[in-house]
Length: 404
Image (cartoon, rainbow, N blue to C red; front, side, top):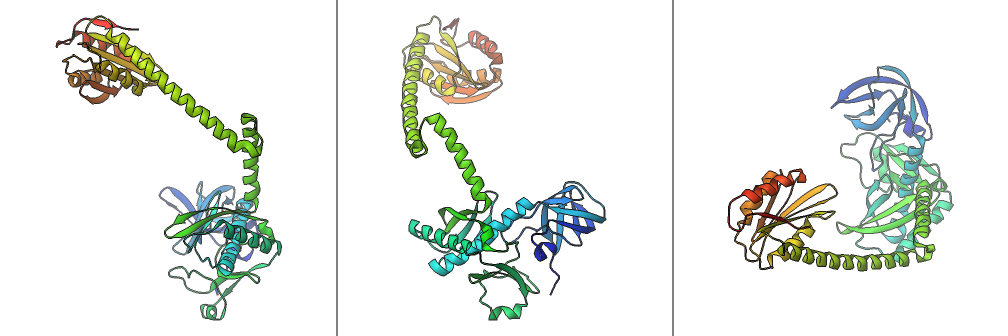
């Protein structure tokens, strides 16, 4: 049997004296291969560990062509170093991974839900179950039964066996990795599960502390089940409490009434938005009528704090009024400039060609059809665009009129 690495021999070891045996740079990324390591390389659904190699941050750990490469923030030389593990990250992964083994075993043995995949994410974890749907009652039962096994403080152990020994053992496995050779590592939760796995695990189920199921989603004919375990539960609860505290102050409601208070605020907001839209439509109609009453065949207005959508409302109303002139409208909101040309109801101006010329002056672009042309551009050249409109020959276009 091959000699196991330190992360497998002693998963609670946080420091190790090592020797850098090989170094290199690939795609600008320095890496080092060590004679031993306490850092777990990514695999089996478990992310890689992080740490320090002689004070240099280890950014990732990957297996490449059978060698464990430590990807570094800066190059190191060959020779002796002290390797330090980011223990908080490792222990979190051990809690989540051991919890997954327990969850998978209980779900399979007591509910008939087989696990087909596992993912350990930075905030939540999930298992994919070969079952089309799961009921709320079954989820509660699963969580309760997992909690009972956590309280039972069942020992968790690891050992390696020869492939020919596998057939005589009650091993739960989704299969060995492609191309696997040599002995097989087994992780056992006493009386609950015996599984093939290369990850790092706790010494007993009691160290999981707790497991919380978060919800499910449909996935490829099966079900994805989300969960968190151990310290993640405390951190998640702390975040929820902080948010709830802020909401209690903002909404003036207790926890039990927060949802209803938000619903009431959303209803008020919806009513306010409807009233605002009605007011903007009325304002647009009034502005269009004021423009139509202006002197001269070209009228213009600028609307600070209004976007292209408002200009379109004004322009559309202007096109329904029986005047022969055109309106040049501009607006600016959040630093973005917009413009629009609208032809009055009896105008014969070629708005598309005139609008394209305005867009060119403003250094922007736009488009349109019928009696409207709209676009976006810099309003720094607005006066030049107005001058061009005033001087450009064509029907209905002569002296310029401005409307406030």
